[in-house]
Image (cartoon, rainbow, N blue to C red; front, side, top):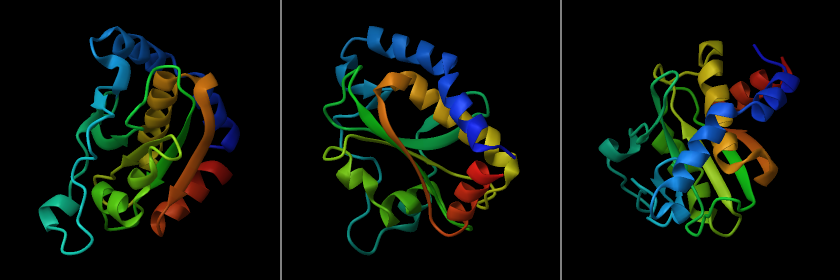
Amino acid sequence: MYHLSRLVRAIGLAAIGGLAAGAAAAQPGAGHTLLGVDCAAPPLWHCPDRDCEAAVVTQEGPSVELKTRRPFFLDCPSDYKPGDKVNILLSLHGAGSYANWQRNYFPAMDFKDKYHLVIITPSSPTRIWSDADDEYLHNLVDLVVGAVGKANVDHFILAGHSQGGLTSNRIICV
């Protein structure tokens, strides 16, 4: 279990993410990409207002956190360029759910351009968050903060639905 001070230190020590940002900036056409995600493309697996197919809802995300090899969704402003100021949102699903369900239930991706949001939506392989997931969650934050640059993060927002909210509380208050 981690204290808030550990989370803040982890954000500041994002060396691997910094290397990833340098690599992304060196890629042709990298002006609108972040960690390999094409920010200018529409969000993947975006559900219609109703009748979203189960195969879409259960998606865990196309991006992979390399230390744990676990998937996640990363959504970013369509006009993102390295050095832009952004607000990072870590959005956690509730018990028994999936990352893409969280993305569509709490559709921050629909507001990513307006609020300059970089949205991390991870998925627990057991569909229930536990302290065994904390390393993965910290790695995700380190990776994304390192990629955008700590000085370019205006706000860090931690949000969760139901058991994801309890997890948010656990990882900052214990």
